[in-house]
Image (cartoon, rainbow, N blue to C red; front, side, top):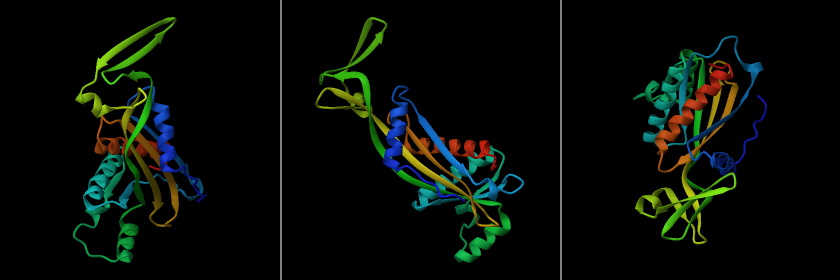
Length: 222
């Protein structure tokens, strides 16, 4: 499979935040590369999901979310935490089980995640009110909202009077490997972000998982 060049997580998240600034809503973008030469004649149907580099609680929940998204797309998917639950197996034994029972393995890595901020154009504050300025033709309309505790949860008021939107951001990498040949056949990077007052990290990951699976389907691997 050709080498994959990825943008750094912080840079990629910054790009998505800029793209979504006007909408000020949830933004999810997935980019992928398919190794067509290594794909089998038919689409993958039996897939085991491995979430890497996460604590056990996050791993189990994340694998379940991805597996459900794959199931909804028509694939028979199982979380690794379920497949090998209470089983004491060596790495070789696990590999043999995967080769015997599954067509492919989807490796998911949750990269950079946490809070971020996005400058809001045409929004200012004076420490007492937040002012939203809209330009319609030659007319300018300004709406003022008193600053409250709720304001501080969703907006970041800078000392110079500018206003940033408090965001949650998430970077997820997914790689699909053929279970029989052990070759990588599909890889992707997904960047998701949303205003912190509109979502939480679990919901954001769920939307990222849906986007990953939709891309897999569009690329013809499932």
